[in-house]
Structure formats: C-alpha cells, structure tokens
Length: 213
Image 1 (cartoon, one colour):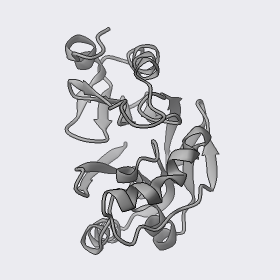
Image 2 (tube, helix red, strand yellow; image 1 turned 90 degrees about the vertical axis):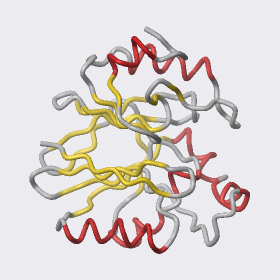
Image 3 (cartoon, one colour; image 1 turned 120 degrees about the vertical axis):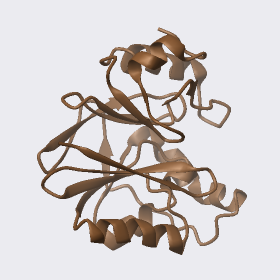
Image 4 (cartoon, one colour; image 1 turned 60 degrees about the horizontal axis):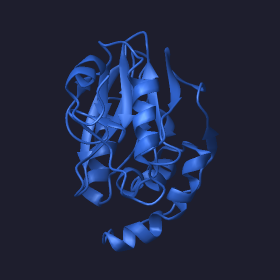
C-alpha cells in the first residue's frame, strides 16, 4: 500500500513528496528543499523511517520544484527523471534561482528522460506517467490507478490550476491536459498538488472555476 508523505519547502510553499510502500523503497518527487534545515529535515525523515530512495522524479522543472535535485542525487545516489520537453526549463533554473535570490543553487543533469506511458517502479508499486503540458512544456503527472493516487505537480490544484503567464506556458494546453487526461481519471482519485492541500478529480470536475468538466 502506498504511503504519501508531504513536505512543504521554500518560500513558495512547494510540496515535496516521498512515496513509499511496505518494502521501504521510496521515490522523491519535486524536492524543493533549498537550505540546510530543509534538507536535514528531509534526510532525517528518510533515515528515521529506514527508507531506501530508488528514484528522483520531477513533474516539471520550475525553480521551486528543483532546488533540492542535486542534493538528493548526491546524498542518495539516485538518477533524475524528467520529460525531455522540460529540459529548457531546467537549464534556465540557475537564472531563476538568481532572480528569486536562492543562494548557492546547484544545477543538476537529467539522467533519464521519461515519456507518457512509462512506468516507474519502486518496491511493489508502479507509477504511470501522464504527459500534461501547459504550466510547463514537459509537465508530467504520476498516477497509480489501483490506489487512486495522482501526483499532479502544478497542473491542477484545489479549485485552481497552474499559472500560464511564465515563458513556455500555454493555457489552451493546460486546459486540454486537464480535460483529456486528468478529468478522465476516476472521480475518487486523490490529487496531491505541487502547492496547497489535496483534492479529488471528482471535486474539481464539479467545482474548479477555471476548468469544469
């Protein structure tokens, strides 16, 4: 059974996720930890729970979601997974870090490019990749249909959607991703977004003011 652990990091209140199961293997998704205290908090949790980190996954590469990438790679010896179309966003992260005054940002190289339909395995668990561009050109979501879990990144929030006023964003693409990919999932699927609290697909189909079913 999947356990989802949420950590809210950095001034953007970004949600970093650790997903694990009964085997104690786990994946880290979107590590936003940017300073010593946040990184220690993440590592202490992993050590205390005796978890084994096997993958580092990015839903997309906006700066608040990648601040801890290199730290996680170095500390746990794992490879970074990202969609190829988000590589320009990752390559611009250093400039964004300077703009938002994140000191000592460490850039990180992509090790594995992921595509829609790929399966990420850890322990007894599989995560399927959905390609959901709009907020970022290579944005993906990670889903497990058996347990109705969706890590949506910054595509879909509770009663909101991801911003599209950044470079390489597109609201038509975002709307299409939500309508044709996320809103076709089970209404009971729990959505764990990149910011804010959890919601469900069914709730957003009825109540989201930006994209309704």
